[in-house]
Image (cartoon, rainbow, N blue to C red; front, side, top):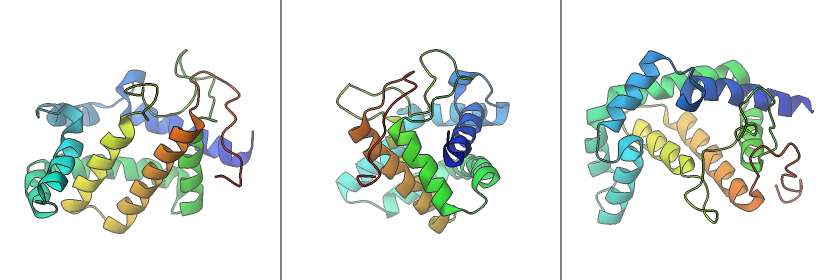
Length: 190
């Protein structure tokens, strides 16, 4: 395994342990933030669904910003926690961070430490076999909302581009969960 794959795998392993309740390691404060988000009609997808609605109605950005102000503290908290994990692994190295998102989208980060049916670091289950996993949309909404209420726009819009990049790669690569040999994309295509 190349050094960049190992670095990416370690990042996603920690990221999942901190933020993905499926793995049972999520701290009480992160779970409390998720619970607060889930109190809204759209649950954890509340920021994304409101982002879509405001774009559709032509009330973006002002209407979206006003609505997200009610959850400002939890959005900034989640971004702060995510920044801590990103910084631990990439320390401001945007190329390494982008590579981790590319490999995540390709599904080439097989990790024996993870449970069966989740051995490949990739986004959560897709809505259908022909659509990318919805977690990309959820994360995009949270990032856009956080930027609207004061998160560092430069940092988080760069991360949002990586989320979009991983989404696009995933849609083309269509990785198979638990496959130790997902081929990824050819370097020229990537």
